[in-house]
Length: 115
Length: 115
Image 1 (cartoon, each protein chain N blue to C red):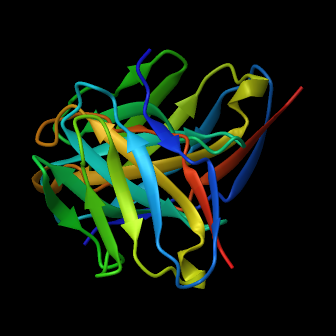
Image 2 (tube, rainbow over the protein chains, first blue to last red):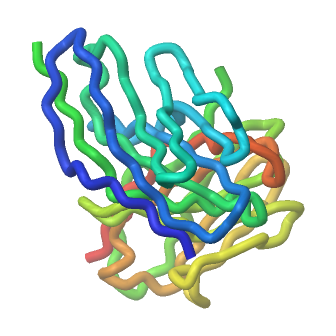
């Protein structure tokens, strides 16, 4: 069984600053995928970024980057140059590749971007 | 940009009644999923569906739940006899692949309230 831990229930960040959201995971699987999703107050789940366990390079998507440290089992999300529209709940999720569709989510981190 | 749609956005039902939540996945996607999120809690996997069969289901997905793809576009979740604890946001998601890295795209959700 896997477990996803997001230890930061909430964070404030100033506009234009970078913020790091922590995610650690526990799995015995050798091959797995890690995802980050954003959930604004409107409720929808928006895919942000993906990292495969065998990917040697950290994933990047625009202002989002994933700081993947496999040995430490961490997959932190970095949002650079925060914008007011980044205010949302952020969820880390993972799935083993032998059960690819079954996303397991962490509890989430609420980010509030202030002017 | 193609998107997953869900109807209704909000459903109120009395305990013991049957409800059907509807989803239209992205048209060229092959894998379909249902998740739920009880208010203030993390997103939980319910079921995955491929080739007109359930691929995997969680312990939450008991005999009261069923899924169906009645035609080429809709994907439904039925709860036969709703309970108070079924009150949650239900998300439908779809992905092109279920066996290689493929992000899941989520719909906007249906908020189910059981009274």
